[in-house]
Length: 177
Ligand SMILES: Cc1cc2nc3c(=O)[nH]c(=O)nc-3n(C[C@H](O)[C@H](O)[C@H](O)COP(=O)(O)O)c2cc1C
Image 1 (cartoon, helix red, strand yellow):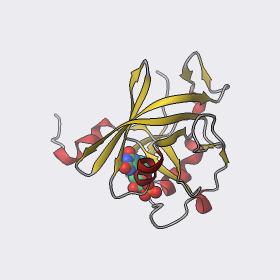
Image 2 (cartoon, protein in one colour):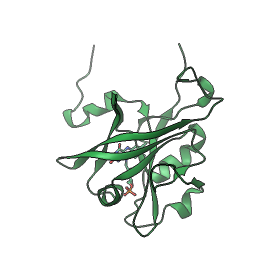
Image 3 (spheres, rainbow, N blue to C red):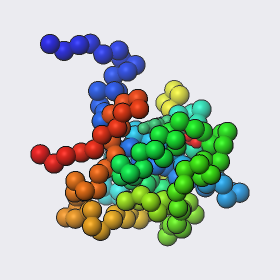
Image 4 (tube, helix red, strand yellow):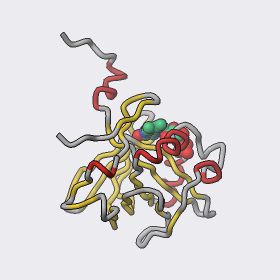
């Protein structure tokens, strides 16, 4: 028997899903990192992805200003940082001071990538769609990198320990079946 799920919580049955760290840098050089699990590929030629960001957060303000961000793939080793980046806001604090992450310059965007992550996409925004309290950004991937020992034949292996957000404070990792 299935239980009925509240409509405004129906997205929860689409979890667990990968959580990424979105990195932005404003015009004054302030770097910010936020956690995002509402992310998906939407096209491969050209390579487009979509992310959905809450209008009350800080990250979208910087993306509106610069039209750039990096998507950084954390392994389960970064669970603590993902929780912090997803519960503190750049509106109030400089998260780089509490996250203990290393940043490295990107090739095609002025936003850095996160060295501690196992994969990165450098992205430039193509479209912005306001959807009530969320903004959907469609962005074109300019460059993509993945840790060579963990990503083979176009796939992450189990050792990559990709972090999935199950719900609330609960995270999981994928297992090949
Ligand atoms: C695991 C996890 C996933 C999240 N996914 C999203 C998301 O997809 N979109 C979003 O707007 N906020 C998401 N959040 C919440 C934001 O990360 C949170 O509001 C954060 O404080 C925003 O930071 P900022 O204000 O510096 O941009 C998530 C939080 C967690 C812990």
